[in-house]
Image 1 (cartoon, rainbow, N blue to C red):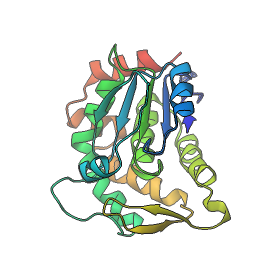
Image 2 (cartoon, one colour):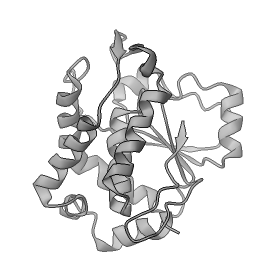
Image 3 (spheres, rainbow, N blue to C red):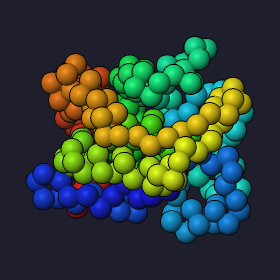
Image 4 (tube, one colour):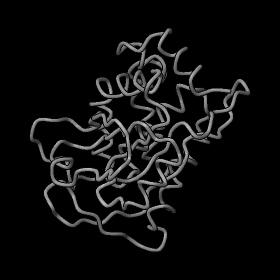
Length: 220
């Protein structure tokens, strides 16, 4: 788990800290962990996982007084997206992004959402793309977006070798080190379709007023 804030934007603003955190799933959250989230003021948990994952491994919030919201980042409908090469999975995520990301960002810009915790399963791929689009919309430089994405290699412990995780079907798989090309490739797909990251958002209903509200919420 880490704070999404702290970055400087191209216009010299700063992404506020203490508003949005990113993590892996909360299925193994302990009561002590829930108390730590309470101290951080977390009031919304934003889950990017498949409905099957949520059903099999629901978040355990204990006494955390938080609203939960579901913004799936993979196509729904029964297809098996797990075990695919990551580059292919990232392309699938970009296909879903037109529906999921504008709604997610609009929720983040709202009055009742923050501070919030954003997560998928391991907290790197779906969460990584969502955070990258958010930071891009706020005006954070691409090199900083990539650096933030690559921090998950350290957080997941994969710099010491592949780590096991369990997919939505209960199959144990391995997650390994990722490179910058995955996140830059995903962003390139979104930008090529609409000219820019903000163009992608605008084309899917997240207009200038929405963007202004998001920036007002996150930038200092």
